[in-house]
Length: 504
Ligand SMILES: Cc1ncc(COP(=O)(O)O)c(C=O)c1O
Image 1 (cartoon, rainbow, N blue to C red):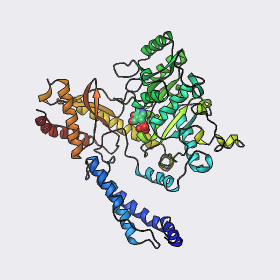
Image 2 (cartoon, rainbow, N blue to C red):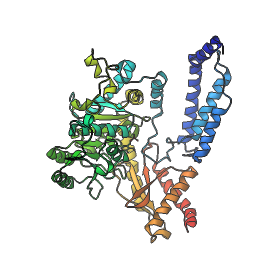
Image 3 (cartoon, rainbow, N blue to C red):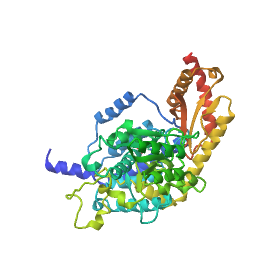
Image 4 (cartoon, rainbow, N blue to C red):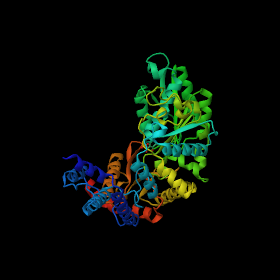
């Protein structure tokens, strides 16, 4: 291909006028999509077998492409719209009020547009100079959110990383490096005082996974004893730490949860902090889901004592309703911010300007290139103020209490706990199954869920409590109404009939 043709094709790719037109179309397509989804006119999930979707996605790669050229031909805009429509048609519709599934929120859409500024301009952040505004946004948010947790001004440190799993891993790596002074250089000792991690047994799987990655071994995760509300029992924890000491084991941290994944149980942090202080053990709190209660007058008490935690993880892409991924890690003592990764990289980080390296995120994170991940949160907060976050927490927690009321009042439903937040685990137990063995009752829940999800009427998730399958809802869409929840129960009843006939 002649050089000039290639140059004009490249110029067309970067043509701002094409972007203007595509952006206008995108706005219209998204608005129309959300109108239908939010009005319940669209299936929650347009379920298809993954292989069908993969084949269709691949077909688009093979279909005739349009050639970039200036002026941009109309057909490019048309083709762009076709591709966007297809992506919207085939996606999961978190914005449906009938989405009551995983702990993934419908982001406030405007937050997605702020993220688009980050994506389109690409502000990778290992060093300040590559993402000056992305760094400023992140630093300002760390200051505000850390203060919300109750950390002392100027005493703490924090940063953003790619998701709760990576965040927990990073914080626990720091705890390991602090507990075993030379572990970064020499590795984890295989003899002498063997390290362990004490964790809530119903914490997210990334906690145990971290133990594997950190070289402790997943078998070295000691489950903290829990009370009848499935929260860590501080008195039992005290006894467990005493036993571990007697056995010459070294707990690198106690990993508490705000809240634990299974039923959304919030650990009593104040009492746990007392125990950790007594034993000199690092307290880590996974507040990926529940950190946002810091914005709610009514629910802040759930994390009382969190300011005593040595490290905290908080996913803004859960209960702060911004697009994934946007996770914060905090250290109570800012001196710990460089403990996770003790590497020098003089070719990247300029030793002639040590004050500025404070702003080079790559010294604190696993990532080198890091997406400017906090644009959505910064934009949303700056536009509407922080009170919206407390409003959403309160609305979704209140809805979940209403749902619990509906379940408790119904003869054929069994809530498996009182909700502590916006997570509810339950079972449908029609008359025919009241005396059924646990495995049949469990199989019924799973088949029923599959049936509903594939019909597109609602989206909820499977769970397991005490060895028997159950249904689980995170009521995370503030547009969901009590009527939707009542309709969900009726839908479960109606579909349950055909599921029952198939089970027999
Ligand atoms: C309590 C808790 N911690 C950690 C995670 C993992 O976070 P991410 O999905 O952002 O990696 C989750 C995910 O649901 C969670 O609920």
